[in-house]
Amino acid sequence: MIRLAEPEDVPTIETLVCEAFALYLPRMDRPPGPMLDDYAAHVAAGRASVLTRHGRIAGVLILAPEDDHLLLDTVAVSPRFQGKGIGRALVAHAETEARRLGLPEVRLYTNEVMTENLPLYRHLGFVETHRAAENGYRRVFMTKRL
Image (cartoon, rainbow, N blue to C red; front, side, top):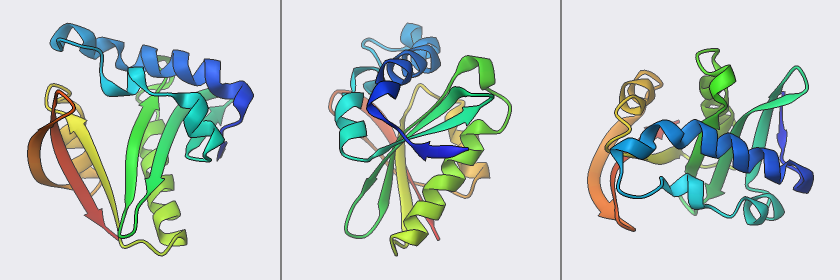
């Protein structure tokens, strides 16, 4: 089940994101951007959704609608639930939300050192548009037309 996150979910979201992105810490000179986000603000703005399994939050999705696309800002899956289709379900939910909002594409970015993400996003139909440094991170930008 995917639902909008609620204020009481924030501590669990913060822990889940830190656990999900911890494997990248040795590859980077600073924590990944999602580890530094203000999830209380995302929840308050209605941008955060959670996917639950067996009553536990298994994944987190942060979406930011723009004029001409939906930005999939963060997707994070608890290490305990990785490899079970949670990430794919969250990305599919982002696509559904973009369609509901009448937006023609979903965009995302990932850090260059998060190499495992690139084949997954390509498999899900995203194409790389460019690479650039942004906020001190080397990012790979991708899009998927709906």
